[in-house]
Length: 164
Image 1 (cartoon, rainbow, N blue to C red):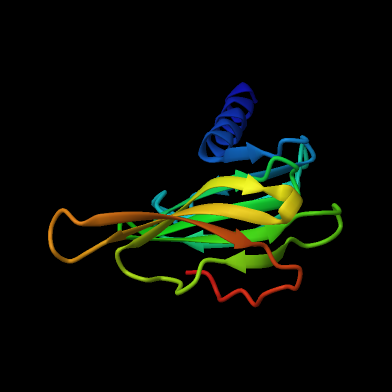
Image 2 (spheres, rainbow, N blue to C red):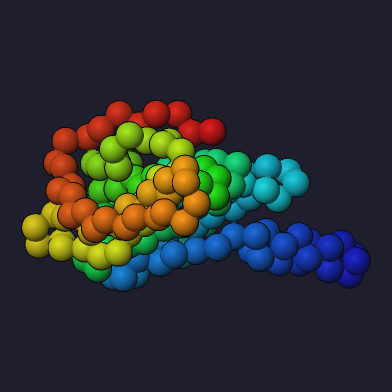
């Protein structure tokens, strides 16, 4: 009986160790990642009410890694989807009532463009804007440019293409 309890506790501990969470600034929501594949590679990112035991809503999945950044007012969750070491895109979801699904309101242009990496560098929440860093690596060695882009977060839902 003790062995069964010990094994159960080890399985729960492993599941918790595999889960990485990002709690919203107001403490109401949690975005968390788990491995996407049985071998531990890739990531799935979910969002749910904080301290909830349900799985929540799957927002993105890929075979590499995903990062999440909350807006200071907890209304928006930006997901940085790293498809590989040379491509990353940003998706911004509106997160609201506990019973409402998160809504895609913005994504970076020209998704999945090789040698273009996007990241979140700030927010202007009162103006519904996200500040992005766009890094472009050019084919000839040593030429990398950075451009800061301020993008308006829309109010109408966008269609989300399937995840990997």
